[in-house]
Image: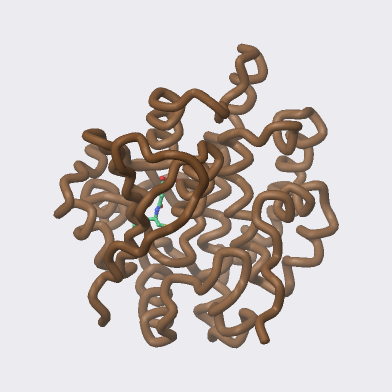
Length: 271
Ligand SMILES: N[C@@H](CCC(=O)N[C@@H](CS)C(=O)NCC(=O)O)C(=O)O
């Protein structure tokens, strides 16, 4: 396996409040939310790409504490290996000046505190409440649904995904190296309990899942004049789902697709 690609600089506009470093791994939809929030704030940051699989330990070694209580679940429960991974630590993980924040939820609040403008949350209390509900659902439900559905396809063979998972709105998934991509998706498939039966259920529920996004858009909670933390939490999961050619047309035809294109436009095809 490759050593982590350290210190890849990423440009964003604006100033750095005492230096920002974001730990991610390539193609991660969760990590893209963290990147989008930093970009939204105009905060420049150094991006450090970690190797998927080694990333929990990598962030722990860099002083991030992980989570004492489970933050992720599959099918309503956090089984032992997932709880261990949550405890060791997830990405994105942000170091900003002397502070550290792990999870998009905490990163959003740290960013909002150190640099209130432009905001990630509306000032209006009722709308903020709605945005936080959408953010929570994007974090706790949609992020896992997208992960499991794309893993399910890749476990049938990377040919189920255009470019074998090497290109798309989030870039190469898991790694630029195809061997790592294959191994990491097999391991992740086990951790996230991806089975054909579960895939069938998730696919059956998917229209209702996407309706939820569309309803928030029509209520003005998502895809409003200014983007908010919930938009930036949800759009990367839509982007990940759109790697599956069987799901992409329906997503793109919906209001959710317009949000996706606004936040993460389809990259132009390479030469
Ligand atoms: N929902 C949390 C968790 C993010 C998350 O699940 N990150 C993944 C990368 S896509 C991770 O670190 N996984 C660690 C692992 O499962 O080993 C967030 O948005 O910050």
